[in-house]
Length: 109
Picture (cartoon, rainbow, N blue to C red):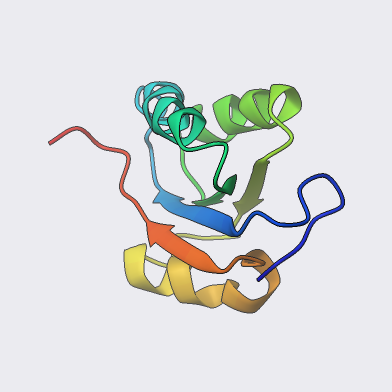
């Protein structure tokens, strides 16, 4: 079990979220998943790990703004678009510190 200074006995769950040109979706996605996380908050600790595949819209800017207000968010921006699968695996060791990982998509299709 990953233990943090704040919550030593709660397992950490990472939401790993690859994104590309999702400027309209990242804020609503975070709000929706955070609402679920808050309902389970007594049992688990959560973090959000966004990997931006070098979006050409405002996705990265919006993720930075979210990270500025939520310390559980970490954002990685790649130098180019590696694609969905490769973006998940590219930095997996550096990104994931958790006991459990949930890989998510932000788009609403």
